[in-house]
Image (cartoon, rainbow over all chains, first blue to last red; front, side, top):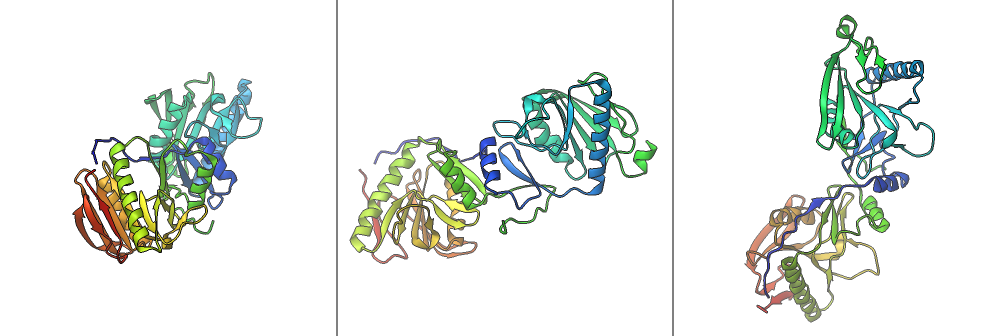
Length: 198
Length: 188
């Protein structure tokens, strides 16, 4: 027997969006309230509590009103799956898309902005989620940080991440960096005194 | 879905189940890989092209095939999926089994000896043996192709094999738990 060198190493198989769709339709994740595909890994997300739901609904309402006033073609969807091939199918809390109509997940090319409300998920939203959205070229990404009573606005996506992050405390107006004229009132997003008094 | 655990962390990875793994396999999603396994709910893929591994694997398969023929009642098998539990499906490089089904994966209870060949993955393969033990496979060999030794392990328990020793890869290696079975590999 002649022995030779070899170079193979085991590697984690990243699920594709097609794999995720196949497994979802087969009911593989029906035991979970919500799942997402992030960098080829299926992630289960806990049920939402009131502060999270209230901030999300309030912001979605404001954004919808603001977009209507602007006469924008963008529409607001909440908790919708966005197709980010090859290995991403997240369900952001809020999505601004130009293709709200139609079947299946929202195509990422139609997405102008995504928003995540973070109460217990800030590290994940700043880490793998931000990397995914930036790599998928989502132009703008907001994180509503309920614990620190601030909004983190991200712009300048690339495969390296977002180039710019702007920190806006609750109480100050949140101006979109990429959608002209779009502003959200951040009063009332938080639950405590810090939000009301900011 | 009763096997799914409750989500304890805000964002927790979902462990794929054996049936999810097989569904993906049937769909062709994993066909680019020579070999895939489900380890603790995560699919692990090995790429093709590792000649040292292949040579040792083939030598062990042929040796155990011959050994099985000599004792009767056992068969040698080559890279067939074995279900060790709800989230673990492994594909030992070589096995000695009680019988080979027409199709589909093997139950762990059918496997009497599992052999993993290591060239660049010795640490992973040695760690993997604890899953074989927890699955109740009576004996496991890890063949270290670089050091040219076989790590023999037996007496399985939930945390691994309680007993182990080392023998030379080249020459005659006897099974500890299967009476009369041996694999004889010469230097050619």
